[in-house]
Image (cartoon, rainbow, N blue to C red):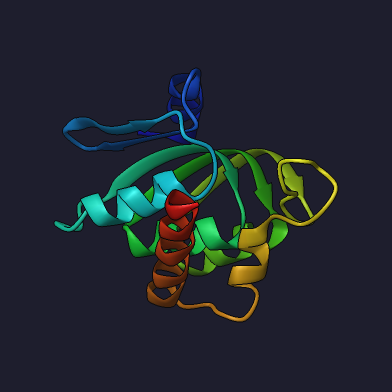
Length: 138
């Protein structure tokens, strides 16, 4: 599956994932949660073809963790694109930005801070999972 087909299939979702066998995951949830779920789900390490609306460095590291082979993002940060390239993920995006903003559009996304001092997919997964779990408790 190529990036153009992924782009067409994103439509009403924030994140979708396919394997060679077909659609395996959809989410309408915003934030990093869908990629955390995808990492937890893809324990068999199937190659994934993913479309996500927004990818920052944290999301890029999670894509590396869960074996994403091809990624389409509507918006991707410069750091995310660098990470994805380093991990061999074929990536296309509609818009490249310096960094991902929070939902108010005024500050950096909290995940940008969590990802700032790591290039490890495993470490980022633990950080992101903890972040999501703390949000659920709030």
